[in-house]
Structures are given as C-alpha cells and as structure tokens.
Image 1 (cartoon, rainbow, N blue to C red):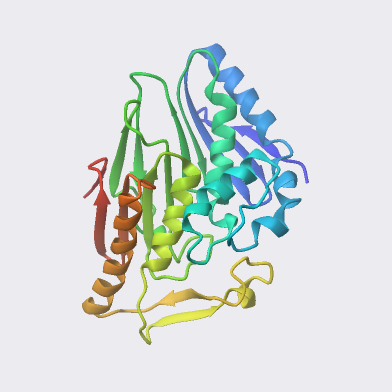
Image 2: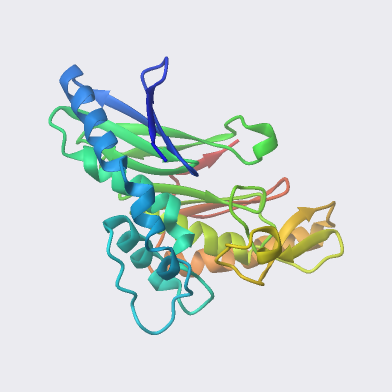
Length: 281
C-alpha cells in the first residue's frame, strides 16, 4: 500500500497510509519548511510496514521481560508502556503517540525550524525552538468537535507530547471517559498514560454497554476484555465514582513523574490533575 503526502491549502502536510493519518504544522524559514517536509515524508515511508512486521510482539501484554522491539517507533511503544506493566497493557497503547514522535524526531533537527507539531489522530508530538510556544485546542466530545480549552506549551516547559483517549475514540477503552487528555515529556508516554487513565475511569451501571474486544475486532490486542460500546444517562454519583477512579490513577502517575498534567471528562463533568498548562472553559 502506497502512502500519500499532500500539502493542505493552509500549508500543513498531510501524511496517510492505512490507519495512520497525520497532519503536520511547521513554522520557520522557507528553506526549513521545505527540508522538514522532505524529512517527514522520508521517515513516514515504510513505517506502517515496519510496525506491521512486529505486530505479534506489539500485541502481546507486557510482563516480566522487556520485549526486544526492532524499529525505533516500536521501541518507543514498548518504553512508554513498560512503566504500566503491573496492569494489563500492550505496546499498542502507545502506537499513535510513538508514530507522531518518530516523525517529529525526523524533522526536529532541520536548521531554521522554529516549531512543529505532528498530530496523529489527536496524539501530538511537539518541537519548539527556544522562545517558541504553541497553543493546542482541547475537544471534550467528538460530537462537538470545537475547542473548549487550550493547552499552552512554551519551549521552556517540559511537555513535548499530548494525547487523548476515551471510549468514543478510534481505539477501544475499558472505561467510560469521554476524553482523557494527558501532557507528558513525550507523545508516546502521553498516549500510554491517557489509555491507562481512561481505562480507570469506570463504574458498573446498567446504562453502560460493553462487549469483548475480540467480538468487535478479531485482531484487537485486548482479546476478550470487555470494552465500552455505549454509555447512557448516568446518575451524578456514578459519574463521580468513575471520575474519582481516573483521577486517582492520574495522581499516581503524576507522583511517579510519568505525566505533567491530565484533564478528564466523563460526560459533562470535568476533573484535572497536575500543572496549570491545561485550561478549560
């Protein structure tokens, strides 16, 4: 399958192959933009095939021994998920963030490049030269895809990755969070943590529908684990229980230095953990 690389009307670069759909925003000198686009395209070519070759390893739950992944993006996936191995997790929990990070690293050393973001379906890797900053919009509900808040990241901040996970998204979730957005030192780390926190935002209630992951996707790395397929109206106490469970996990990850901040949304109820970089209206 050949990949596509298209410059959008606003100047952003769109890279797509199979399930990977990336939008890259760049700022800098004209020469830097040309070179950065070329570097990104070169790094993207063959990436899907390389990861597909390692799928058996990447879909295997992490346990006692650190898996020996071959491709740098696969290695990022393993490294990002390894701190969470006491619970059920496979390296696939960090695939989108790791891919974004891999492309970001390919273009980050371009002379004259001021800033860049590599957005892989909402999981974002950032590059910021000294003095630069980026504002990233936050979307709480996919049905209302309009920013409801901002992440403000400066070059001096430790954040270089932003990721969002939730049951309505493109990946399965064990929990009922509409969205968990995480800021971390890397996009892969943010992706893995967002997955873990979103899974923890959970409660038992008849209004929640679940099904074995394998019944929805025979190739799912979640196997027979029950994933959320629908969430009906919930009483406030159920929402509060789910949100508190997710916040407890986020606080633990913050204490371990694995994340810098998290914003959690369960229905219309919000919770937050960590630094003031996250703001919402």
